[in-house]
Length: 211
Image 1 (cartoon, rainbow, N blue to C red):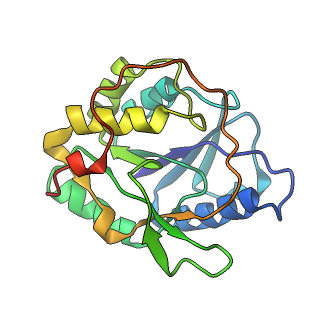
Image 2 (cartoon, one colour; image 1 turned 135 degrees about the horizontal axis):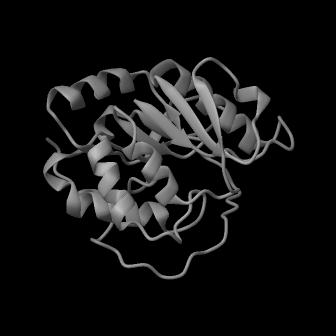
């Protein structure tokens, strides 16, 4: 699986955003084949043999990321840069391929980064991780409003609603694995708020069949 994201620029390595992104990247290196950041600048802390940086605006458009994913030859996921992914993802990806699933998402399990990855607690709908095969990303590319951007509000609610409506027969909820974990933090600095968009379905994970 290819992980696609965007980084917040590092102004201070000790800042919670920076520490959370470094921890997340370390976990991704263990489970993903390739890591791609749509970013305006490269971050030396993230350089390794698996990581690529593609020039992009500060808040890249979802339509551009979906186009990239649609042109790959394997599963791709759009994932927020601070999400820790557990080693269980390797087993999950294998299971998704075996059952010929089309797409997957998960509720987040939140942890205290000052304590450790465990304990963690489920906190909300699936909002930070969306994985799919290239043909699904091609359909997302066709439908997604070009005003939605990674790191801004609404994009993930739109995505969850779209997945639940248009990929429902092959859409898997991987929440029970606790693979997708979010560090608890106080400050949330979003990008520009997009204009209202049409939602394809009520964006809740309860609409997803667990296969």
